Every structure is written in C-alpha cells, then in structure tokens.
Amino acid sequence: MKTSRLLVQWMAIIGGVLIVSMSGQAALLASEQFVYPEGTTIDWGNMQGGIGWLGGGASWYNAAGPYLAWATNGSLAYPANVTYTTNGNMLAGVDNGQWFGKIGRNLDAAGVIYAGTPATRYISFLINVNTLGKWSQMGLGKDGNDNAFFNFGIDSTFRMESGSAFGAGSVTYGTAVVNTNYMLVAKIVNDGTSYSASANFYGATDTVPGTEGAWSLTFPAVANNGINIDRVYGYKGNVVTVLFDELRIGETYADVVQVVPEPATLTLLGAALLLLRRRIS
Image (cartoon, rainbow, N blue to C red; front, side):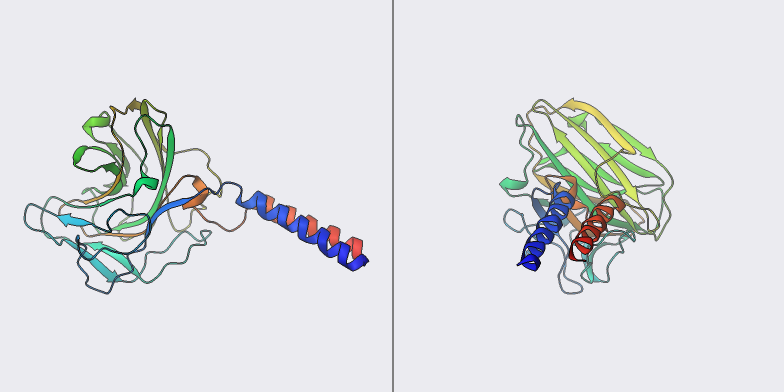
C-alpha cells in the first residue's frame, strides 16, 4: 500500500514537471517538411503534403518561367539543442540567373492572422544560401497582394523586411556565412489595428532558447490596413541557390521551437526523483 501511494505521488510530481515544461504550447497551425520525391517540382499540383494548408496548393514562378524550385534529397541541420527530427527532403530554389522566384501557399482558416482580430503567430524554418548579397527569404503575407508581407532571410546579413502595405521597412544584423545552416524564429503580432514583427537567427553552435526572450530584429507597429495575413511566401535572389527546410507556423513560441529541456526543468525533475528516493528509503 505504501508503495502504491508513493507511485501515485511520483506520477503526480513528474506530471507537474511535464506540465511546466509544456505550458507554452497551444497549436501547431501549419507545417511543411517538403516530403516529396527527389526532383518533384513545387507547383500547384504537386505540393500536397504538410498540415494546415488551404487546397494543398503552391506555386513557384518567375518572369523567365515557372518551376524554379523542387524537392531534393537531404536535410538542413538544426542547432544542436533543437530536438526536431528532419526527414531527408528539403526545398531547393536554384540559380537560373534571374532576379527572383516566389513560392506561395495559402493557410487554412486556422492559420490566418485575421485583420481586426488580435492574434499572434510564430514561424520557424531552416535556410542555407550559397551566395551572399542576393536576398533569399521566407515569410507571411497576403494572397494576391505582393506588397503585404513580413519576410525573414539572408542577404549579406540577417534581414527582416516588410512590404509597402506595412511601411516598406527593413532591419538587419550580423553577418551571414555561405553554405551554412541557420534556423529562423519569428513572431508577428496583430493587435487589432496594427502589425509588428520580431525575429532571431541561430547558427549550428548557437543555443536556441526554450522560451521566448529578446529579439535581434524588431519592427515597430504599422497599421494593418484591414489586411489579413493568410499566405506563406518564399523568395530567392538572382545568382543564388537557396535551400529551405522544416517550416512551422504556430500560436506560441513553443509550437515552433522544441529544445532539450532547460536546466531549470531538469533541476525540478531531479528534485522530484530525489524526494521519491528519500521517501522509499
């Protein structure tokens, strides 16, 4: 009987630890891991995977012609303390000498940041470029309005920019390195009348925080102008090959960032186990 009571107490303590460690999770609204056969062109008919997408459609186009991107074998690597598992496929936007290609995919109703309705969305993805000085980025915007977006990516620096519908601004920091994997984590807030955005980039040796903290890139609030953000856009510059992988969109930071438990959580778990050991002995 004593052992049974101790087991119940142990389960309650461990359950409390798990609740603390998972308290920031709400809902993963959309994701795309580009799980398609090698060489699959990313177009309206072929991009049917992931979750949270309206109609399963996508397009990648350019003035010189479509199909500038396709699925390719391999995966970009996360920073060491991130625990997501990659799947062996990613999106390749290759150099064709043109200025840009653009991929777009609509979110379903759950993924939309509704204009006039307070909402926060978080986004994370992996990015790698082979040439600096030619911007390549991905972000959230409005279907049918190429001026309404917040994008996050790389030129020679780490960059965040907004379209003219949201003030046509840009902010940068740091220096990027070619052929290097980076994890982007960003936040877009709609307070009902305005949008604001923030972002961080993390390299292989960086420690990605398990909870939201300070942001390296921030945009001040700009009027939302009644615009719903309802679409993911990816762009690439000319004379550059860009790789994207592991796109996630959620309601909280914890929906798009999963890391090895932080020391405080491990300490709490250790204390619970120590207490159990003392009671048994």
